[in-house]
Image (cartoon, rainbow, N blue to C red; front, side, top):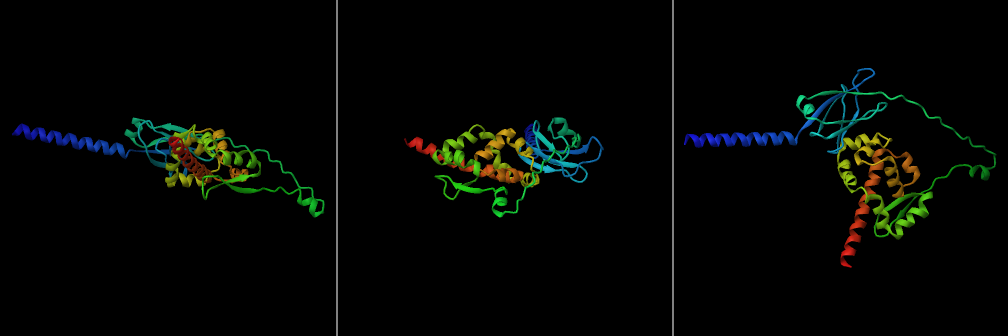
Length: 265
């Protein structure tokens, strides 16, 4: 009887330890402090994103941050005026806690801006022709009730007509090559911290990192979705995210419809 009680106690203790370890692993977080290598001062409001978990956070006034992560996850750290870096989460980091990370300041350079002055003549009809006019229209795509694409003048003939005549092929060429990356869109839209960070940014850097695409791919996706150049040039990163997400959802609707049609045939 004594041996039986010892065996039961041992099994219970082992089970409890296993459950505790699993629970700890499930809620693992890493802590860090971001500082400037130039001043050794903390960097507040720096952006931290876990690329693997698709979650984000920001440093506080003391440069401290805490974010959900596990071993081998990659964190992307960025701060205005500093070189962005990627850091891999290691066992030692998880074990020893807060880690100090230095970020290097970038040399800032202003691009030369050329302003073309309007040469007014005093004649209304002549002067009106010198004022640049932008036209942003939206075009409905067949098979998608209530949905449409914003399009600038240069895209009307080549892209919108292509979408109308063969929408499934048109959209497949955009998203079919990167399905795994596009699946992250929903996670990005659900994370409030990531949305808040994207709303303040216009550099597309965080979008490129999270979606694992190049700047060319990102520009091509938005362009092929027939958003106007005005929108692309002025939209913040959150607006670009929402635009790509909307376009991707439409692509999936058309793709499923085409697959059902093919199976019936």
